[in-house]
Image 1 (cartoon, chains in turn blue, brown):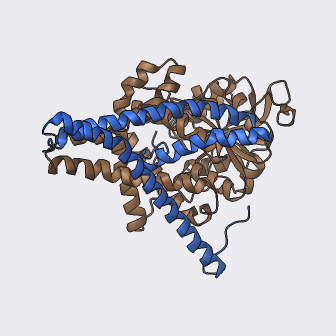
Image 2 (cartoon, chains in turn orange, cyan):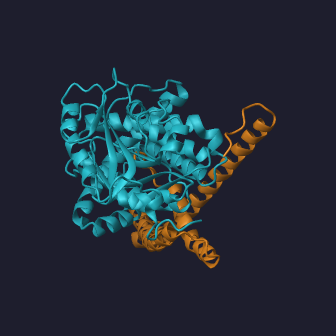
Image 3 (tube, one colour):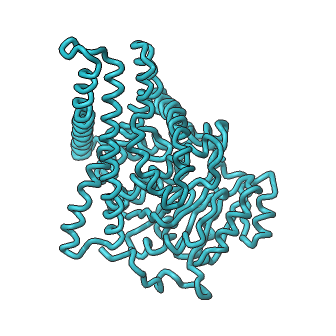
Length: 133
Length: 360
């Protein structure tokens, strides 16, 4: 997400995964003594926020469960709206995460696919090479 | 990599004539900013580390901008005609810069008194071309200012530090950034080929192998659009600028780790969220005759509220931030319209917006 652009979907998941990866990355680099000081501060703050955000995601799932329970009529199996609510609540906590992860993975693979095509075109002189670093 | 945040040895980047004066020139592009230019200059003069020179580009203003800036002690440059964009005005001043460091700040932006001092250590690393800081709206009163306030708290607390950890902040904000003059000039200054010159510059630095840093503790306070008239102009410029930059740089960006992923998820989310907010959610609510589905507009509230309240509580603004959260949902729904409009106009119709309309 950038200020000025809407959306916190797969981006939210991507940044969350990065946040979870940061302490591991930081630990490995700290052992090699090549972790810049400013990055230690970022890790500590982000780990705290990540834990809180995951809690927030759980709340989101819970809220979605309640919404679905209201929208979807009670199932004949349970016969009560309470039963339907319980099922919806349990399912919805996992489903959005899996859907988001799958979407993120597919989008990422798609991006790598596009990069391969661009590399192939560059190799064959169809487009100019990138600027040197 | 060098430790750039612990107490730095600043002797190599502070080469001033007197103690506390930096080898730094500040460029302030200004067009009809008589209401705010004095505050901006004063905030620069009151820095704990002072710049050597403040260059105000009076971009052919029809008001007293130049006169006020001169009275405040800044050097005023006036091009022969209006340069047509912020980038144009900044480039006009860049030709006059002789210091090692250059800072760009908007004429409606003030800085925390230690902002420059906090930003400076990031540029100790020779490979860092630019550094930017935390942005917080100066006035948080109207719906639009409140929406932007929450948006900034979220973006600068949650997203930008992660980007910084990965050495690729998505953008070095144009309202307050510091650059190495040599690298900036090598780049040809700020390009006028897109409407988001700061994004263009940041991505150009990455393509040349330079780094950009975000410094959480260096804070600036711009005046944000206070009504829909000005907000519309800004959102239109930002949305078109983003699409123009993706179109311009996408092939090269695919080779830059992290940056490509940040842009990919931003683009994907922005498109999907815009379709959801403007079409999908209202359509489903009507089809199923169920207003409860409108909760989709705010379903991510628990996620966004965490970083927002974290920074707000540290700034002792918790209640103000909580009260501003509904405005954020309004702003991003309006924002969705402009993003879709930019995508359709730029990509489908091939009509690139070139007119720079000042948002504030």
